[in-house]
Image (tube, rainbow, N blue to C red):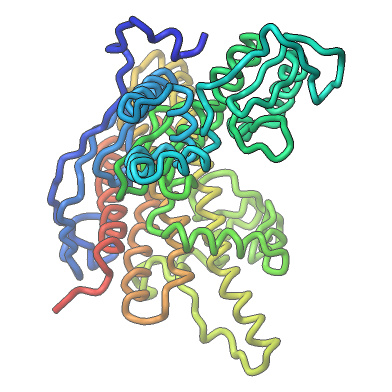
Amino acid sequence: MSVRDSMDGEDMSGMEDEEYEYESDTSSYAYSSDGEAGDGSSKKKSKIEGKPSIKVPVNMPADVVSTQYQIISPSSLAAQQYSLIMDVASVLSVSYAKASLLLRHFFWDKEKLLDKYWSDPEGVSAAAGALYTGKEAELGASKARCTICCEDETSELVALGCKHFFCHECWVFYLQHKISEGPLCITTTCPEHGCKERVSDAIFKKLLPPAEYAKYDKYVLRSFVDINKGFKWCPAPGCDKAIASSGGLNTVACTCGCLFCLRCGEEAHAPVTCEQLALWQEKCRNESETANWILANTKKCPKCSVRIEKNQGCNHMTCRGCKYEFCWICMDVWSNHNTATGGYYKCNRYDPATATPDTDAARAKAELDRYLHYYQRYAGHAEAGKFAKNLLDNTETRMTEFEAADNGKYMDVGFLNSAIETMIACRRVLKYSYVYAYYLTPGKEKDLFEYLQEDLEKNTEHLTGLAEMPLDKVDRSDIINYTRVTDNFMKNILGDVDEGLIMQD
């Protein structure tokens, strides 16, 4: 049954949207100057004014910043669509079917429709293919021949307001064929060649079996989101929720747990802009610059050359053969990754001095090396994020095994789940931070960004190591502290990108 049919006379109060309100919250954060976790002396303070404190029913990562939006179920979406069509039909004094066609022509923009319609109702109706909508006709006493099948003359012919008559069977076949073509069936026109009159919802409903009409009705509902600038479908597989926004926001979270960008529909990608992400994805798709060959599933130990497969999220690797400790990202000895060597995570920075582009070939190689530097780290954090998600899924199993092995000793792992969720958000931010860094022009702004990136990377790595420890060796207070600190570092880098990395005098 169509929603339009079922709603007549029914109480729609139960169809409520899931609306999220956000309250402004001003916070200050300090960056640690000694490279260690904590809120110690700061090199730079970033006061993030007006950043919202988010109230949502799911665990929204700290990098999700918004003002207000609605998560809408299919039933509520249908109710909103019905209400909008009825409102326009009432204001313009036209039929429901014509109001629906007019709104679709104007991408469900009511204000734009009303503005154009009042100035030229006939022209707008013709452009929308709704000039004769509501004036459909059936052949009565007289007889005529269907111009499609050319069978014997009959009085059982149907036409739109354009008066192009076709038999019932040809109409049904035609409409079923259009529905089989997919969402564009909502723009179906009269079968007569060259006629631009659109087939209304009423004709689809009258001529088709209920099951076929239900498919069409679903496409009409989907168009309410697909061609409406104020709505977006949740991109998560199997989720049927839509997101409505008044504009001006990027990252949103659906109740299914999916975080995505409302502007481009991609995964939440702060601090990268949608335009930068599109450029990066196009670059990654370019076969001449693909890095898949260099990012195989295994790498050789720098000391003994034994192939090693990374099976956890931490980049601190130890070869089981020779016990050599090294960094999975830059393959350098792990002992160089500390404050005594001038910085914990210097391997996050691309050094252009390593390349000497004297020729076109050398310059091309240098550019490819620069791209691979950022792509390798981008892909590394993407993979580490997958490990973190698997770790989150397995936390309850780990707890059960721990209880069984330790005579039923219970451990509340809520703090551990919170830590892993923070890790997942940080890995996502770090992943896209390398895309952002790739497009940054060398200079003070990039130096500051890489300093913030280094801090976040260091703390994320340390938190990963703590969370992956056996439960009997887990230090609850240590994990809680590093979760808080790492979350603050993530807020810092995102807040500073939003407000500009260089402080004003």
